[in-house]
Length: 163
Image (cartoon, rainbow, N blue to C red; front, side, top):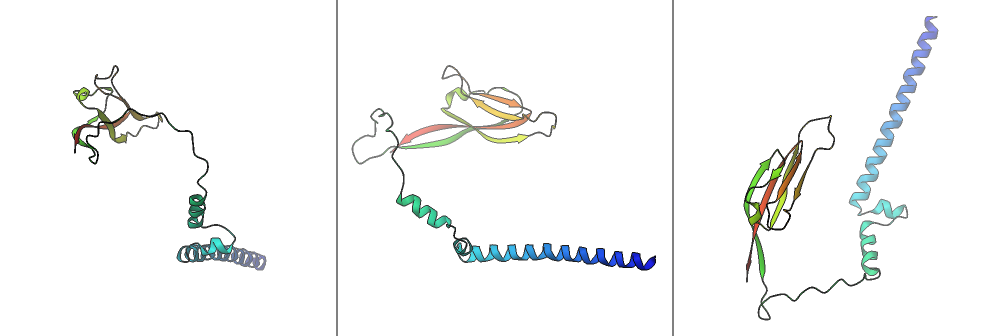
């Protein structure tokens, strides 16, 4: 009886060794393939009949496709005399964090406000945690932040035009 158990144990041990050896061999072949492909600039992909990302980008550049419909013509700009260009700069005016929905005080003076950070609170009961930002209606009213179980960072910018 003990001989039978000993043989069975040896067979199982050999089977486990073979499985582990196969797994290790697959991992080593995968590593060699990745190293070869990365150091030969897509050599493995080319050897297998594929196209490298560089060759694909070159083909897209050669054949850009049909042009889309033209968009509407915008109003003429106020660029000043020919040869000069206007430069628009944005400067941070306010930066605050909100954990409750509501208007952003004093934000009606800023043409642009954006979410600068979102920190989600741990709450597995509510997967719909989010931050949203709405421009005041009508234009000129304060921006509004909508908070759903998160902490929302809002940054508002002022714009300046220079030459």
